[in-house]
Image 1 (cartoon, one colour):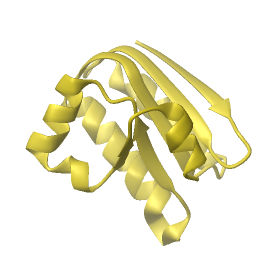
Image 2 (cartoon, rainbow, N blue to C red):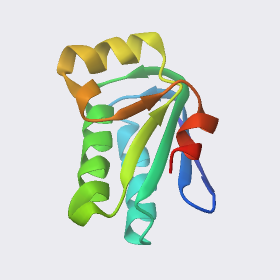
Image 3 (cartoon, rainbow, N blue to C red):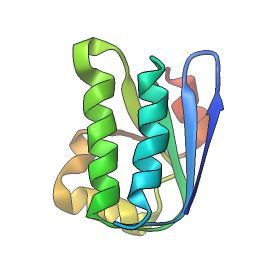
Image 4 (cartoon, helix red, strand yellow):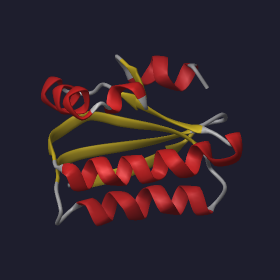
Length: 111
């Protein structure tokens, strides 16, 4: 799994690729925590290149979302969510927690 970040004027883009499971999710958590610890609370998570995500990956996203929304400081948007991951989000009821956009440009533009 690879994680890269890119800073924009109003938000940060976190691009994830590969498999997010219990072995790799700490890397995602570390990248998200690094941004949050630097006061960057408006995040877009690009999932277009993610092949698989386990509950550990969902937990990392939920933890970051909770921190972003604390004290109304920001939000965590999901962009380009693959079909199988979107189905898992629907099954767990998480689609109501995240704002999901069809592509990164639209997600970044909504901040």
